[in-house]
Image (cartoon, rainbow, N blue to C red):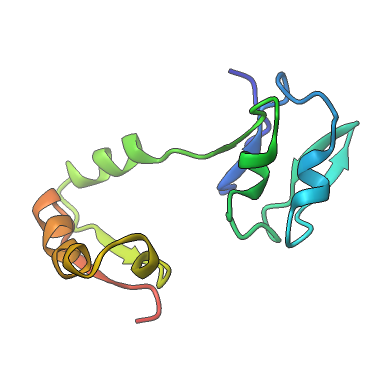
Amino acid sequence: MQHSQQHGSVVFTRKAQCRDCHRCLRECPVKAIRVHDGQAAVVPEQCVACGTCIRTCPQHAKAYRNDLVRVEELLHQAAPVAASLAPAYLAQFTKEEQSRLASALRQWGFAYVAETAE
């Protein structure tokens, strides 16, 4: 799969699927998409990873980076791994799930679990 994923970019463009409709450019709430070489590209420094461009792209040319394999590799190494939870996780989980999340992450192998704000 061809895409213009820059190292560290959470949201990226699959160039082969982008059809230059620029819908993502118009819909991005933080204006983090620019036209580069005729295609709409995400500006990583401005992107807040809200997913608006992913949801609105009719060609499915925008996608999130998936680091699950890398996380699994880190958890199988000897060095301790920390999980840093963005404060927005509270909106994604019920109260019961919130109370069990840190424990579940530790069971998966994370040595330390805390909110990013800490």
